[in-house]
Image (cartoon, rainbow, N blue to C red):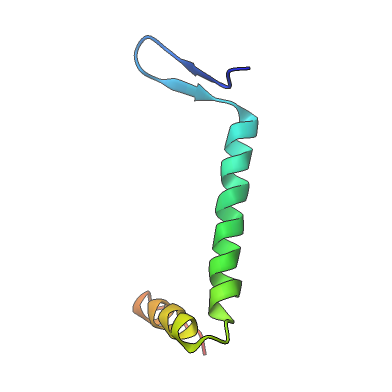
Length: 61
């Protein structure tokens, strides 16, 4: 089953399931970056996440 439809003017319709899958993947990736890397015991990962939070003016401590 084709989930996308391309119109003559170049627009593309995407199914709700396809959009939901993209949103779920983005949420999972974001949660992994915040929790998996932010609380990592490997100091290089933790320090990289820490520096990025400070460079974006995000208070973290």
